[in-house]
Length: 291
Image (cartoon, rainbow, N blue to C red; front, side, top):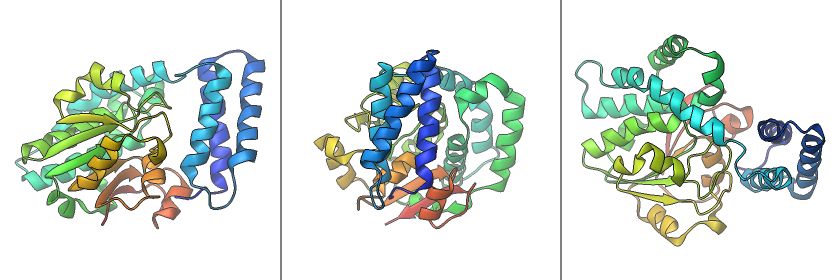
């Protein structure tokens, strides 16, 4: 996906947010914002991949803040909140006596709904009862783009590129079904802290390695995947996969720049630029397969 003009102010808003997470020093926040504006001037032009600009601007913000992980506490909180609501999501996936294919569809839907919630922020002001009600309502609506039937026949050797903490707890519902039907999973996480994305540290904390067959990283703290910085083992896994599952918008923005496939994009279209690039509407629950 290429950079959209609307991405500029979204990125600056995110830089301001992470600066506030990192410090109460107003002068340092101003300095961080000015540095972000300078990066936009240097990197933003029509046709540039969105991931190039977003990675550059967030790396610069971390550098100016002298903080390699402004979202550390938020990631921890995200996982704690998601663990509390996981049993309810699990009950919806396994309700009744569904076939394996139907359980897979439900698990994918639960995972996509997880992409909609910012669990860290939710943890401050949204109770579990409100989450359950909202989750159930979206769950009843179902997937707006549903290619899960095709995906279900491709689960032999899955490379699963994950997104944020919190929602990773719901991703495990998908892991469980893939392994139940005999598929193997290569889990791919960020190579170093970036935003609220899952890292190897989170893998160890949540014992995610027990849910999958192997764990790889993207090789760096790039937003999404920077293929120029990615390990050969990861690139090789993408090439050999029966199915790549790409979770969330940042991974879509970067993975869609390459021709690996078949690839399934699991996400909620939370911004107009991504929705339009996918040919969809805002607020869609998406499980879209691209061959």
